[in-house]
Image (cartoon, rainbow over all chains, first blue to last red; front, side, top):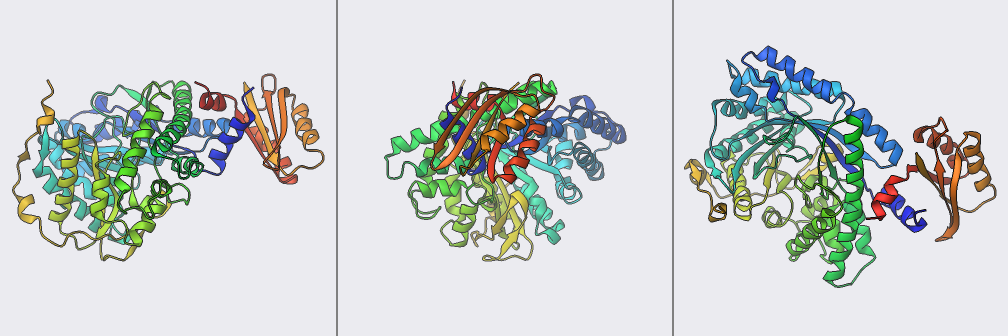
Length: 455
Length: 89
């Protein structure tokens, strides 16, 4: 029989340290749904999603009960919708919104929390369909509840599409304005990527990539609270011990994710894709990535040393997790979404954490500037410039970076925005008051860096 | 299917009797049992075999939940694989 201490350790992780499986995400290819007639396409999309994912939520709940592991979200990701728009006879904004509403309806029928893939990959250039889809994003997000959207504007291989960067600044701004009554909530469902990954199970950036199969199960694990509690036991020890402790904990967390992924794949009769080894915080106290950094000895997240602490954490999580799962993928690393992390919220409110520091942190963490509320009067060109900066970090460092900012209408620095649930509370953060207008307006493409020439 | 039943709480009379009684009433065989005092808390861990019993994990934990509330304990029922996968390579 298994050692009683190990059993109690697992139970404590779940009961007291917020260990959970953050998401089971089913990726569904919609390639077979393409066609010229919008109504036919919508019908095919709805039928395919609701057929493939009909048991997803039930299976998730069954596994949760039998293993005693909370599984917080069940989600769906689909082929980037822009490819369906490209095949339409009449690719208009109205037709795109119709597709978004179809996704929303399918998500509601299956009972999932979110559906991702209202997306376009335009890192090198636009097709006609992609252009229209991007234009439709603000309306699509404002007029649906569960649809998430993402746009890839750059990659290490292709460089950065600055026309798309410019347009995305305007799209983000417009999405916020269309949902002014919920303080710009649509922007919480919109991510702008550089080096987007095809098998990410986490929202809002999940989509079912071009190289993926018909249907797949991806699982995202979490557990910042568990890592924090493990580090409490090695107070004052050197960094070798810190890294070792994180690795051991990450191994255990990931093994649980692997078990859930295999079980879900077996029960749904869908191939297992990957486990995403991420530390994804929630606003619950004790489930924060910032608190891990503070446990390492940083007085308040954002102080000098934060980037080094995050680099160690991110690397150790991967090293620990990689052996625990047969297939690791997705974003795999520590997330730093400000409004979703109790420690980040507190640091931002105290003035310890600035946008500039967060940008530095994105060089060494899993994704990017995430869930950051900025003043409602921020010009679109400034948002575009923020996107360009992040995309540059991703492009040069051959990593995924993303921007999910919310220019909350009518809000100023010092105000606070409440999104509720897992999306938390965001203090409005200061952006530079100097203009980037001329820079952003140049247009064209930033050439791919030397790093891209690997052949 | 094997499951692990974990009972943690303040020591008092009748914990083992009630929990094992509930398992017996539902035709569940106890394969292994270990009981200790851990950090001043009564801790009992049972490995049970659910084959032959009509109760699934969920129903079993619902039954034990009544004892849990009655005796102010914390009782978990989980499939064995979670522990073996987490702690064994």
